[in-house]
Amino acid sequence: MADIRVEHLHKEFGTGVEKVVALDDVNLDVSGHVFVSVVGPSGCGKSTLLNVLTGIENPTRGKVEITHEGRDAFPGYVFQSPRLLPWRSVMDNLIFVHKDRSKETRERCRRYLGMVGLEDRGSKYPGELSGGMQQRVGIARAFSTEPDVLFMDEPFSHLDAITARSLRRELHDMWKATKKTVLFVTHDVGEAVELSNRIVVFAKGGTIKDDITVDLPFPRDPADQDVAIAKADVLRKFEELDLIAT
Amino acid sequence: MAKTLDASPDQLQKITHGQETRVAARKKRLRAVKRWGWRIAGYVFFLLLWDVASGTLMSDRLLVPPAGVAREIGEIFQSGDLWMHLSSTLQKIGIGFTLAFFLGTTIGLLTQSRWWEAFFKDWVTSTMTTPGLVYALVVGVIFGFSPIGPIVAIVFASFSYVTVNVAEGIRALPKDLIDMSKAFRVSPGSRLRNVIFPHLAPYLFTGVRYGFSIAWKVTVLTEVFASNKGIGFIMRVEFQLFSMAGLLAWISIFFILMLFLEKGILQFIEQRFFRWRQEVKLA
Image 1: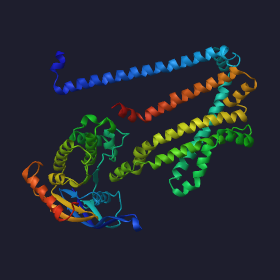
Image 2: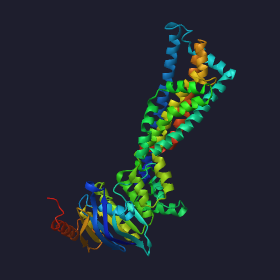
Image 3: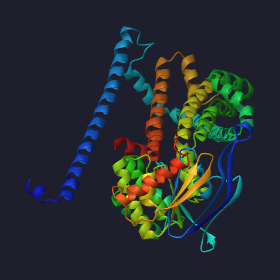
Image 4: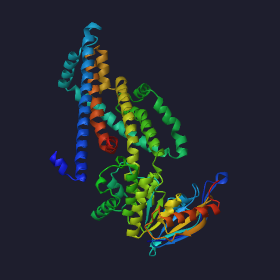
């Protein structure tokens, strides 16, 4: 578990006439065993927020703090595409993000591969697996580092609906079992409602427009009436905020 | 049959999977045997053509038949000349191309900066397009029979192939994978070993392959003009003696050596390095 504190975060790309503001005065507090979704239209700065949080990009202004019991928190990341090393086996892809190759590390990697149902594919190369399996490897990789906080950037958006649904279930189970703080970026409101305790709504221009608490018991079935109603509520808020292009 | 029926669905899947793998492996072997068959047929065909042409299309003194050339090769083997000339040529190539490789890689890395690129660009392009013959003539005049001549010619003629490929490889660096490793706090050393080098390997390999073949040609050419040792030198001697058998014998030796380097060494390294590609292709 980790505490994420974002204060007056501002991120720009380019200069002069080519200047693009990706994030504009973003303030966000996330802490504990929560699943927070960041929702918004394409190009509203959701991914940039994750990149700044993980240190891939530096903020232009403002402060970002991710701590775990007073020290810097260790992050895990699941990307939109699996981002596996094509020249390393599945197992070695997991080991790659660890500091050592000790027996414990291997054992742990094997365990998380098992959690995503790929224990017998460790020796395969990523190119020999299907897209869904590759994404599973990406999820196992992120969990295997036992991070304090897990960042996920539209991890299921490239997958077919059936695969995405089963992976969402697996993700929820793993989140529950491992008690992580998760920040999950998506443009799929249904997915956000199904998985999260809290939904942060981004608008074009990189500002936070709303912060919604979803107070429903887990596991949530998208076909369930309460879940459907919650989804409709969020979508209605989108309309009120004028986020849906007409 | 009864055994299969006893198996659980899971086992059944494993059994069929095993069979599929075996069938695929057998097909692969058959294809390899067939390819070898065609390759050997190619050799037989061209050797026969050569044999028939010699004496009918051309006088057998001008186009010495394969058997005559083989006899000549045997004599070269016994005389001890072979090793002397071969080692001389190989030494020059070894030193020259090693230098070219490091020079080419360094310049390739430097040209990532646009200033250095402006600095080197036209020189790289012009050394690449200059015919090998020009280098051979120039170093012949400057260095005479010294072995430094061919080495300098090799460096000039071949470094640019390494440079261009390294530069291209670096331009195509997988930013998404590098970002991924940064997000997971992977150390720069591990990043270099596991992301950057495996990505660059095929580019380096292409550079080496091209550069090396150019190095061979330039070495032999330089030896023809200014050397008292080496394959190029001995070819010139045979040429001056109008000894077609000798000339063809040395050409054949050269050919066999190239084939050995290409199939025996380069392909072996390639297969080891890029095994992941083959596995993926088969899947």
